Amino acid sequence: MNAIAVYDGVDEPVVTEQPRPEPTPGEALVRTLRVGVDGTDHEVIASEHGDTPAGEDHLVLGHEAVGVIEDPNDTPFEVGDVVVPTVRRPPNGANGYFARGEPDMAPGGEYHERGIVGAHGFMSEYFTSPAEFLVEVPPELAEWGFLVEPVSIAEKAIEHAYASRSAFHWDPESALVLGNGSLGLLTVATLDEAFDRIYCLGRRERPDPTIDVIESLGATYVNSNETPIPDVPEAYEPMDLVFEATGHAPHAFETIEALAPNGVGALLGVPGDWEFKIDGGRLHREFVLHNKALVGSVNSGHGHFESAIESLSEFSEAFLDDLVTGVHGLDDFEAAFADDDTTIKTAVEFAAYEER
Ligand code: NAP
Ligand code: BGC
Ligand code: ZN
Image 1 (cartoon, protein in one colour):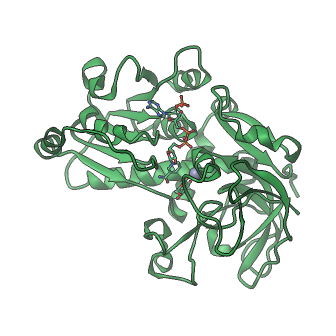
Image 2: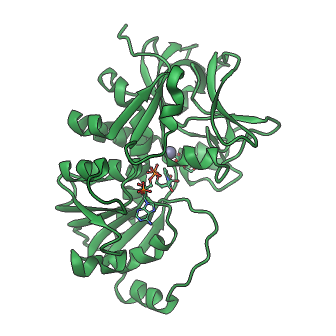
Image 3: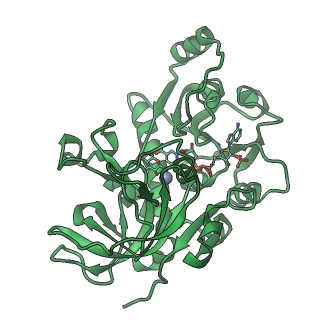
């Protein structure tokens, strides 16, 4: 079968022939429909993040998949069910994090991430997965199901941000999303119902398709060239929640300055090592005197996938059409990995969905 992989020492994905996987007991065989591409895939391709499976010279890409059950293989699924796989797998059988249903809280060494760290991904015509790592999706979401995983990332971070404020009465009204990439825009859409005022920060000038998406969601675009993050409270308002999705390391610390008293910042970007100067005393003081919090968040679990399916089903078709700028077959899969200002969210399509 065809798969899209990145080989060690080569910084671009290629189509490669792989054996079609056979499900072992407890696993189902899934026929892949679509697999999304995000900033992490670009980091993996550039060897800035992730790892090839041990003893192999390539990694099959893809962690944002949707497919249909081809062979349930005695699992609870039926042929034709639409499913989305979760990303993490236990490297050596189970461990406590997986046993508790909290693989997203596992530390390094206690997980593989399919398509990212130590395990092949889903960018192939078929993949197998233990049934416990497959989440059923309503058939009407088959086309957009590749967005469940990235939305689940936002769901987890928002849950952890709220949890950090659960010791007192917190009634947030304003939210600032840092980053107008696919995660940032999906987060603006996910936060939509819960916040009165939502802002999204980027460094693009108009006209720009991501700014159009931000505004069509009723949010306000903040241009970081005109308004650096520490100036946001003065220029707009102090933010109850900041959600960082740029991977720009200085933003982690600038977030503290954008927060309102009692506010929380969720950090999601994955930068490389990066030394720069900060006024540590000032930031330390801000945390303490204004009861501020920062939480880091990575990956997501089954429950976050369920919440993501609910959120996704409420997104408007117009938003999804504007967000997904390309769905590409194997004949032009390279276009799914384009990294330019007209590309927002893309996917590779392996098969079209057909209702059974
Ligand atoms: P992406 O598509 O590359 O988006 C990043 C966005 O941030 C881009 O729109 C970029 O703007 C913007 N940006 C970068 N530096 C900026 C700056 N200095 N000022 C203003 N805007 C800036 O990536 P993504 O898929 O949305 O993911 C975003 C980040 O989250 C990445 O670091 C990724 O690794 C991480 N991530 C983490 C998790 C997790 O579980 N924690 C999950 C998914 C992704 P331009 O396009 O104009 O350059
Ligand atoms: C994926 C997560 C993963 C994270 C770190 C993200 O792009 O969506 O599932 O945990 O990268 O590798
Ligand atoms: Zn991702």
